[in-house]
Picture 1 (tube, rainbow, N blue to C red):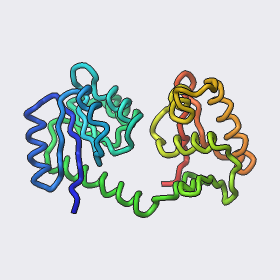
Picture 2 (cartoon, rainbow, N blue to C red; picture 1 turned 90 degrees about the vertical axis):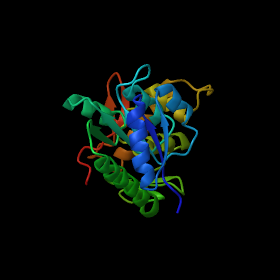
Picture 3 (spheres, one colour; picture 1 turned 180 degrees about the vertical axis):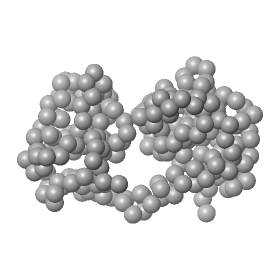
Length: 232
């Protein structure tokens, strides 16, 4: 059985050593780094989960999470001595999947890691090619989007925007980030194309499902997938 690979990012070397030893005893493969800069250099590696401290010199954990989310889509578990509710909310809002306050037990950390990895396995095995939200479903193999069973006539770029937002429902994407991810930084298109494309997406969805919101605008920040009233 292939060992799951975990990246542990914490500037406390003793904590890293303790966590690494414990997780490796439980058959995980663990790489440790002690700064955000080092962590970014590791993003070409294929990790299954990232454990991330918040309070680090240079690039802190919050900013590092934003940068990581531009590159990889794996579970991120924050570990931090910051216990305020607003810190936890911010960490989860920018793309974290879990938040554990220090001090914590190694047994609890492992249990949460196990839980997130099992969830990822279920997603990959049971919903590998279909992604659903409210009345909308994306067929990731066919590159098609359906709303209430009706295929939506999206252009390629419109489809890529919908897929990007649906796959990253917790993340707010600025127009600039959407443009870079969908059109590419070398594209000759204009940034205003993003807003126009989202306008067209909404119009096509509304023709089929006029009473449901799918793309939320956060003024001054960008766009995110609207999970309001999402069935659990």
